[in-house]
Image (cartoon, rainbow, N blue to C red; front, top):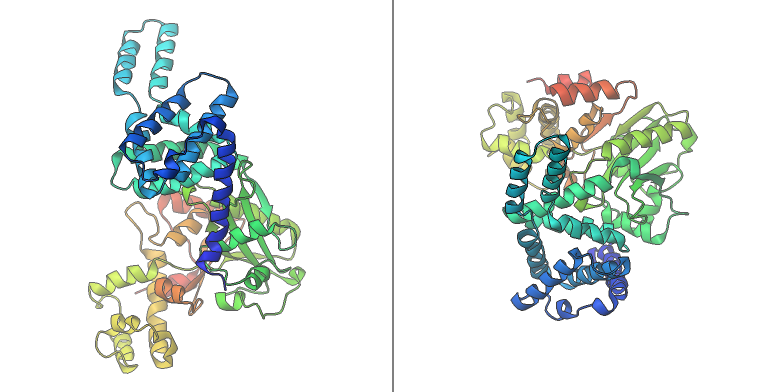
Amino acid sequence: MMTQNNKSGFLDRALGNLRDAWRGIAGSTYDAAASTHPDLPKGHAERLREQMRACLETRGGEVSARARAAALGHAYLALDATGRERFLTILARDFGVDSNAVDRAVAELDRADGVEERHGAGQALRKTLKAPRVKLLTQFNALPEGVKFLVDMRAELMELARGNPHLEFVEADLKSLLGTWFDVDFLELRRITWDTSSAKLLEKLIAYEAVHAIASWDDLKNRLASDRRCFAYFHPRMPDEPLIFVEVALVDGMAGNIQDLLDTEAPLLDPKDADTAILYSISNAQKGLAGISFGNFLIKRVVDNLAAEFKGLKTYATLSPAPGFRAWLDGQLSAGEEGSLTAAEQKAIAAAGAKDGGLEAALANPEWHRDDALSEALHGPLMRLCARFLTREQRENGRAVDPVAHFHLSNGARIGRLHWMGDRSARGLQQSAGMMINYVYKLAEIDDNHEAYTSDGKIIADSAVKGLAKP
């Protein structure tokens, strides 16, 4: 079995290699203070502030600038959580936009007369609006693994910035910078295979899988078998780091149970005999790229690749959880069950053993799905309530409440089918009450479905699902 230590081991090794590489580049500018005082106390913070100022100066050539950036980056990597927060706070407070300079530039623009003068004043104003820290952060781009370093820095910033307006500005600057670098036109779609992909990359798939945990190397090998496909986006400056990846099973007919789909003992299917491609897991591998969207482009590219390789494929669908269902349902139940269950349903659940507390009490039993009578009593109401949750519950902005539903609906899919006990894992039961959903991508409908959802908040679903959702 894969343990958390196994998963994080390659990350620790990569971090150690990066520290060594950057220390080598830093050369004589390397400062060991961060290693010996990782919490960045006041005196060392001032020394670090001077390092940042030196990085913004233009003295010396490109080699000198690179060495200074490497020394600063190495210092950051040597800090502990407290020290890194202090490092980022210095960036926020001391290297932001100079409001006085902005005021002066605005006044100059107001006084400017004539096209050329106003153009020059406008350029000067734009320059003052760019925080010096953006120039400083950009310098890491020239270092080995520098882009990955910034992606990971933003992942940490996203946590620290909550409720901290100073760090929110730094996070926003970094997001804007990464958004420019990670335009989908710069990305490369690659297929990941058991035989040709590096062990290092395969190890990262295990660590980054966010939907259905990869339990072993045999499990991973099964997911990369001849009747499976795995595709990922890569950035040229992060060639060994998947940004987002999708796992696909080539099957005969619609799949409705994830445990069956991932069964390592199941016989292989000749992919040429498959009529359906099931996209059963889509994982964002880089937390620091949250909010920088390219998942929709990934699905379209994958569908195009599969259609070109296998002419017999007729259906493209996901097998997806409804991770927001139980949280929504618990909220409904806490407000009272009267509007959630019919009298007949309440009577059936009570007869199955949940006499006190009804549906809420039944679901509080972690073994409810193993009790045949109770599971049968819950089947109908949970299917109906999940269908209602997916097709009728929307936020004020028209977005579906469930994040997975929103992702696929905004990409042009329609809700195709709900599957009872489609995921019997502890996570599947806790988040989705065991439900799995097929979101169907029909090439001729994708653009219209996308437009209907994003413009009008219209959720496209098969008639069976709509009927199930009726009160």
